[in-house]
Length: 145
Image (cartoon, rainbow, N blue to C red):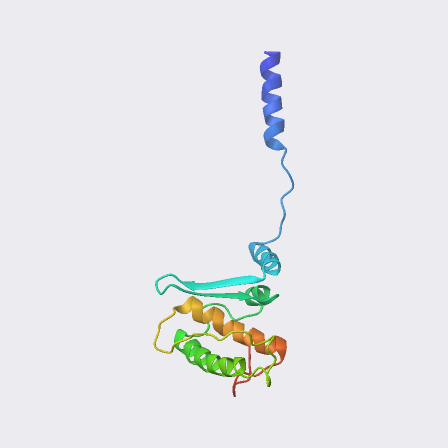
């Protein structure tokens, strides 16, 4: 009987002892993880299309500052993305005029292809982030959040 009581007491102590739980919310955890990750991968498996953005701070900015998914329509973002891509690609081709460290590679973005909402959302927000961070204007629109 004494042995049974000590086993029950030991089991009770084991199950009642637990580490203290962190009270941060899931949103705070997402923001902290976003700070640590500098790489954002944008892909559309159906089209076998992928964009990889390696930009310190973009992932955190996307999670904390950008408008949430669903705020802009896909058509709105497609229109803006196409205009931004044209300007971006022109700057890539003029390294003597524009900083080649900012405009390193051309972006192949075709207006007739449906890249999906996620690709357009992240690309659009990258262009906004880029313009605000590096004080650039990719066209006649003032970048806004």
